[in-house]
Image 1 (cartoon, rainbow, N blue to C red):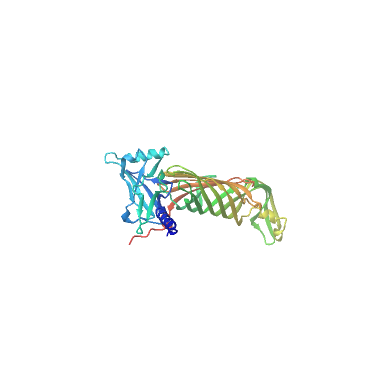
Image 2: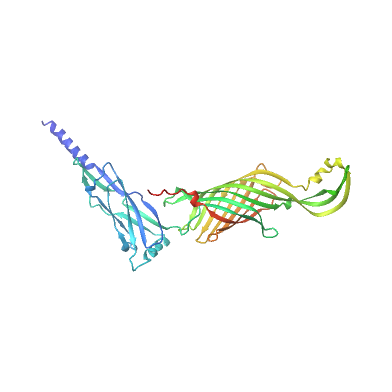
Length: 433
């Protein structure tokens, strides 16, 4: 029996030790969180308490956790105390600060002061009043505190609602001679700035901007102007076996109209945002493909008449006359341009207006007449628009320059009406039964 006594003692000690070694931890789910506040006389600070371990207390154990705030400004207006019973692995609650009847607006002012000064408040779990509970098997489970503090940063909710899906319908304008609409313009745009990539404050800073548009650009290539002989058939001097041509020496300048259908996409990385998100700056890789229908006409200037010549009708197709006859004929071709670069979209939005500017620099095809470079060209774009949110009118445009091309910048200006498509594009919430 003496030899069994030590063994019984060891078993007893081991059982006692293991029974008291069982434990659970209670604490905040996250160490810090950003709360969006919509100005009102009530401020709600939600929190989530997690329980970790192999055991869960029953309702009868009545494990009460008390959450307190260290905000001396807000605590006098604490209406709902942070007292909550822990009964499962995740338990949610909230602190509620509410202004008294005779102090309307005090919560708004206090919260605005905290936001303006970029202050924060801390939530803390008070020391537990219950530190253990007993299981049915008479085992004792200790209750310990895990993450017992949490930092709350307040941010004001956006004062304006962003339009994420828009359709624009309007006209391009010719600014060279007189201000007049000269072609059809349309665009379908998607702007989704906060969709992925969460930072340490809990804010999403990655997004997408994409769209498809139709526009028209007209430009005169003065650097492509050439002096040469121009032959014109005199319609009233065509005989059966001969034809009379008017011969001129002139300056020939190509004037080209580009009818464009473009598809663009930008991956948005937000680099700065004001507290209410009215002003935002992004860095954005840029990709674009444009189908261009290029129609070229020729302006004739500085004309010197050299008289008329009569030639045999069959000679009209000879190499001597054909080039001079074809020199001023309209030409049309269709091709595709691709562009890749980096942009810096900047956006400001208030309750009445929206301003956007997007400078882009990169590498891609040129679009000049008869001189596409297989090795590509450096290009720069400045895109811009101004939207009146009351009238839903958008004045927009872009300046596009190909640095390696002997070409003037291409300017586009258009005015359009905005149609918001958010209610069509975003999924509808199911109605409760």
